[in-house]
Amino acid sequence: MVRWAAFSCLLVPVVLVVFGTSVGGAAVPALGLAAVTAVCRLLLRRSERSVRGRRTAGNAKSQGARRGARAHD
Image (tube, rainbow, N blue to C red):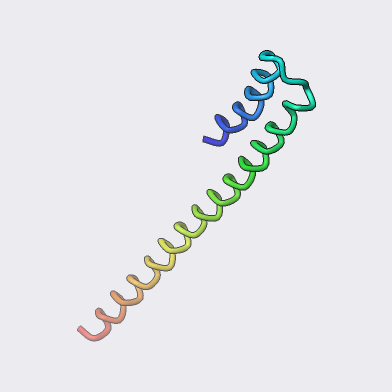
């Protein structure tokens, strides 16, 4: 997903220049897209870590609960 975003960050300025926008004028959208891409990547990684942490914590809790149940049997 991020590779496509990086590709669009390069493609958009090229298309703008081809259609007559100055190089400086095309740089502004390119920088904006790069910033948005970086923020999205950061949020995606944070979300993945959060999900991984929940799964790990959930597994530890369920294993502890099972151990406690076995001890009482």
